[in-house]
Image (cartoon, rainbow, N blue to C red; front, top):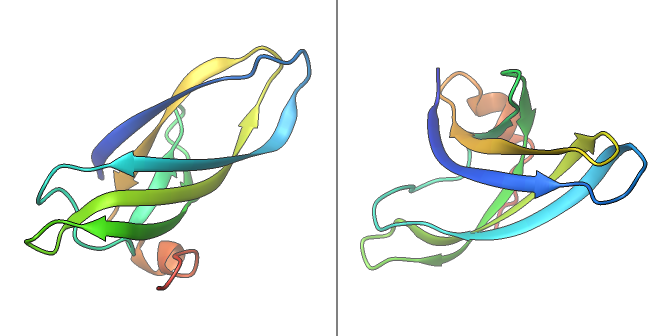
Length: 103
């Protein structure tokens, strides 16, 4: 089981399903919360995991990430609302490294 870093809430305001809605989200992180982006994934409510492209935009004085840019796709049903979690996964390192954005 991974560690949840943050929760992202979403709402599809259209009356149609979207198989792969593109999401770009900048998120602030507390000092010391995250030092690398290689082991990140999006976790859906059903427990499924998906790779996420992640890039550190700014760092704290201790080298940890202050601002993180996330890019991923989200399958949504018509008028659906819900949440996904950004998860730090140990066993998913190779899978997510392929999707990581290198500076």
